[in-house]
Image (cartoon, rainbow, N blue to C red; front, top):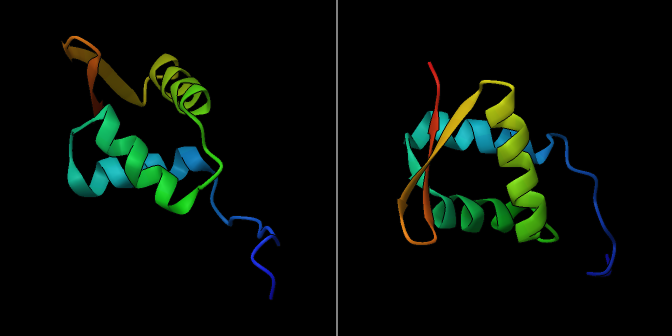
Length: 77
């Protein structure tokens, strides 16, 4: 099978993000992005931030600022 053939994922990126947070606990945004890009190669930083924003607004996660340019992402109970 050629490498250029794209395969549909069975889970959307936000479900995978929630699963990662549930398994590993709170993570830095850079760690989370690199873990997601292993499975979703075409996921960009803009898309990642949009997923974070939607999940935070819906009350699923909390994003806090750690230091300049770094964020901590945690699952809410």
